[in-house]
Structures are given as structure tokens and as C-alpha cells.
Length: 266
Image (tube, rainbow, N blue to C red; front, side, top):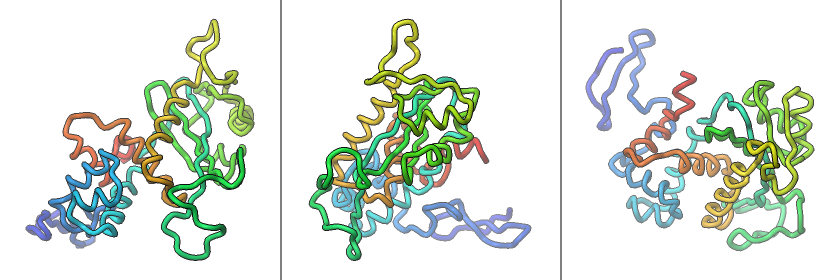
């Protein structure tokens, strides 16, 4: 790698093998974004969970730019998930109302106001299943499922949860079938999933609490477009793990693809 000087306020390099030039942002989600001096403000807007209007005001950019920045900052963290979970794994699904927010034509139903409510009570095709699995170290894996069945759960948890683990669940058929077919020890907890006498370690309190925090936090957005839901799940995961040691740098690092699990796999 040969140094060439600077361009766009970043050191520029040339690859000695392919002779292409690059900088620290080449190949990342932040490549070609402007106003680098305002990225710390964007990181703060994400830390605070601000709306697009609030983020645009904070960063001094248009709302459309704030939207683009939000999802460029969240693209890489979506992939920053553990390859393997350890020990006891709590797995449970939650459901989030399907939304076509931002879509202006060809809606399959009438538009809702500020998130709205489902047309049908209980579970239906309007509710999108989200699978959350957490181990006792706090490592979290989340998946938006096309449908709640064994095949989808296997695609989401396969490889990350193995016979070396033990699964705690609430008796949902899809998760239980995944464990049974995969030969993974599993424990069905009577609702609400608390520990039983004689087995205090077997419960799903942690994943249920995570569901509660996730849904409470999502309410501020008045509905999240289903196509962008993985980004919001990754946003929540970062909020759970970023500490007080230079949080702006941590957010920028994860936006560049330098998340904890991404670094381990490089």
C-alpha cells in the first residue's frame, strides 16, 4: 500500500497489486457521504433516538439527507451479530405491525395514520415475526422472519445455536421444532416463562425484557417500514452495548463495519 497524500480530507492510498486508489472509507457504508465534520452529530442523533426532523436540525442538513445518513450508518451494524451463541440461549418471537411507511403508490391496503393499528385482532399476516435469541453473556441475534415456521427459524438460528447449547423457549412450535430436529436440548417454560423451582437458570426473562425495551423504544417512530426493520433492530442492539467511553467513536466505527463481531470474523 503506497501513500498518495490526501483527498476529501482523508489520506489516500494506492494498492501496489491492483493499482487502485482508496481511503479509509472505501468499501464501507459511509463512502462518498459528505459533511464529515457533522457525522459526530449524526452519531449523537442515533444515540438519542431522534426523529428525522430532529436529526436534520441537529446536523444542519435536509430531512432527506438525514434519512439517507440514518440508514447508511445502520447498514453495517445489521451484519454485526454473533456467529455463535454460548451456553443457555433464550429464544422467543415477537410481532411488529407490518408497515409500508414511505411508499407512495401500489399500497396493498389503505394508509394508516402515525403507525396505526391492525385491522384484525390477534396474530395475522399484518404482524411480522421477529425472532430474538440471547445468551447469558448478553450476545443478541435478531432475525426478521418471512413466516413463523421451523424452516425460517432454522435459517435464522442455524449455525449460531448448536447441540452445544440449551434453548429456553415458551413452547412456540417453530422454535421447539427447530431444536427437536437439530437435536438441541430445549426447555419449554410455562408462561410467562419465569424460572421453575429447582431450575433457576432456566427461564426467558432476559429475552422477554429485551422485547419490552425494543417495542417501547420503537413507539417513538410511529411505525417503522418493514423493509427497514433490520436496520432498526441493529440500532437497538447498538444502544444496548455502546458504553460511555467515547460513544461517538464507537458509533462511527460500527457504521464503518468495525463492529465487535465483524472484527472477529476478519
